[in-house]
Image 1 (spheres, rainbow over the protein chains, first blue to last red):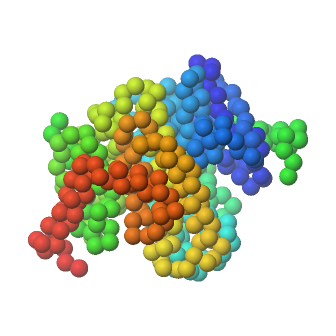
Image 2 (cartoon, each protein chain N blue to C red):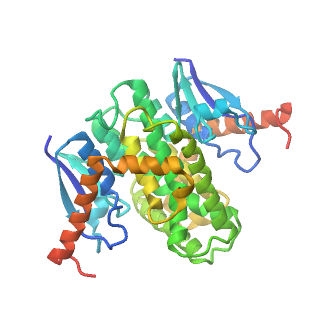
Image 3 (cartoon, rainbow over the protein chains, first blue to last red):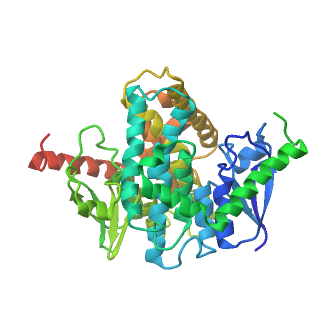
Length: 219
Length: 219
């Protein structure tokens, strides 16, 4: 099993570095101890061969021999079938992880992302719509806070769900949003202190820094 | 296997009727031909026993004997292990469905939902943030349109992914957003013409109408 290939962009601007979604897959692969190599596609332009692998022009995708799979959530479940470090084998424990995987990606990340898009635009949060988005975000964080006060990880031991929830919460890096949610804040610290996260994060930064150095992309 | 219990609210206001997320699960159960029954929890107030089953105070959840699982995406994958009407058995076909399940819930629904929250607030889409949200929505729809021009269903035959993608696209019901994306529009029509959708939709409407009739809730 040494033919896992993770594809990401050759280069991205400064801001998304450390946050591009290949990080989730790198982190999962490091937790699982599965060997892999990283390949690149152009950030710009994105050609038909990119859209053939990933119909939204995003990254990452993973190839495993003949198999090619996109969406980081799907990739993590796919890898979870290979490693109990990501997904336990017992049916009831699997269902528990599965629900938290979807909670991270479908109940948490959407309001967080909506807030992020508005905050990048630098509009004040004064319109009714922007206030509704901020309140949607805080409502979900409040519920998550109540959950995380009582547990170390979301579903028993550390799992793929914690990778995805941490990545959803890292959308608040550089803001003070999590200051009001200390259990969430401690959870992110706990997760990002794991060696597998450290390696994945450093590797992503090095990947994009190498593109700067080799002049693969100048902007 | 007649002990599947789907739990939803006892009552909801008019607007969300036909869109409450138990619909996704009802639809999947009807496609799979699995027997189930529906139970209710109070819409208001939501008590500790509700949060114990669903930590965000949402619905639905599904119980299967001792097992209790929330998040409609997780429930659909769980049911997919019982029925090839939702998820094919072959590994490569499963991976294909899996990536489209996550594409619906994590690449499509978040920008659609962000737009919906802003549009409910009735602010004009004139701020930079609101424009960014609308452009995010259209970018994703444009890519999905390109995919749907070439295929009937997302991943081979009809699957759980089509239930979730249709439900994401139904967020535009009552708006003219999909008029510019005819393949998406035809796809929604194709999916919602299936008898299983019709039954699930009618059953949800009847469930909430019954609550009005019995006076379980007056508002």
